[in-house]
Length: 447
Length: 161
Image 1 (tube, each protein chain N blue to C red):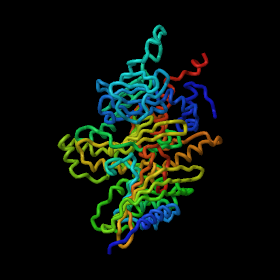
Image 2 (cartoon, chains in turn purple, brown; image 1 turned 90 degrees about the vertical axis):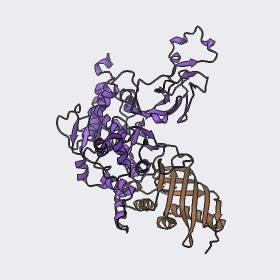
Image 3 (cartoon, chains in turn orange, blue; image 1 turned 90 degrees about the horizontal axis):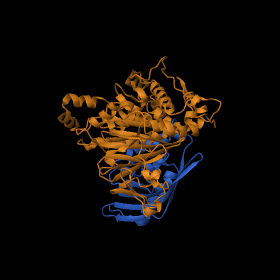
């Protein structure tokens, strides 16, 4: 496997305007550098505050391969700490969620820490008298991530202590979170049940690229969505029978190319973007009785109709988050290795809205994103075949030039034909930006 | 007519159902179901709600038929080549035998093995069959399949445990 110099130039050379190098997907060294630079300099998803409603509640997860704890501190703020005892390295908690009371206590030597990470007590502490413990890294307690931001209940972290602030990083893309949350008459979401956990033996970028790949559904999903349409058309149906929710969900996957061309793609700076500017596969779901009335009472009719009229398809928050605002779903792509990605698919309940909405969302989640999903099976098949195919040394590049235009400026928001691969190019532009931000140049590295 | 279903009948039914899945006799398998029968595979341990939370499977007869037709489709890429599966059953427990009401509950511990190409995985499962006497035959009203490691991260599970 190619071993690169760890410099800005070496990493930037892997991305060209119309194609990217296969080592972005298969090289373990590139993955290790991503953890150190790309995933540290960008903002990643941690969890939702409703997973830790009370003081001392915690939830454990990972930022790439880095184990962390999201915990609600005594001042009601949500903190994100690395899940590592500063003493010997033991993970402090390993259950996925629980309540730790006022402090964490390491199960190995009983060092204890406040829920903001500060060292609280060490048994037989006199053994450290005169040893200069206060000069040690261990005395600082559990290390916090570089920065945490709670955006309307969604908790994000940047691992690097210094770097781009949350609002500047996400910019206009936060409008997709706003639309998802505003769909609650109370302006609030609550997590609904456990996430699907789907292990993919492929690089994380394949999954993230696929979120705005509008030329695959009618091909890869013909076997599920296409077959569903055929069965439905062949069935004898009583007159006036409503289309069942399962058909509303799956049938649009096999819409013709024109549907996807016309839906549009919007890209924002820093690698974010979404499909479904004008309409999407979520546009034609049937109305849930009583919901519009609740929304109108909360927001007024014009605002309620504007919120519900925005039906964005997939919004990618580079590098590793995707949400579907119209159905309150968030998919977190957790990169575990160059060839391993854990996908966690969460759904949320709209506070003060009819239960039928979360029922439809739960149906979408299991039909499309479960390890048992007929749709997911064919996606994963494509990613895993690509992961194996990219081993071919005789062909080095992956093509991303559909609807490429000279002089594309990724620092500006843009709206384009829905089948462009510009959002993929936008992601790679951001990949170079945040991957190289903290790498030395060739000249610096040789000094 | 009141049925006279015995414990042996129920055990035979559950064994025959598993064998149909293992041998890919899916049309025979679909004929075992009530028209409103549901196949449930919870995502969470002791999950009670199949509607307002995500499950791995909560499928009605339309979805099961779609699943079966997809498995046989010409452009079903994740089934080129096809998967194979095997259910290895423990002796089923017949928790309810109510011939007067035509209702029966059978709980079966089993291991489920699925393979494709060089990969094979194993699931430890508890299957609960709620059966009805309907039109002179036993039919499945609900099949609940609890995976021992339901909260683990899985790759593709393509056939029916």
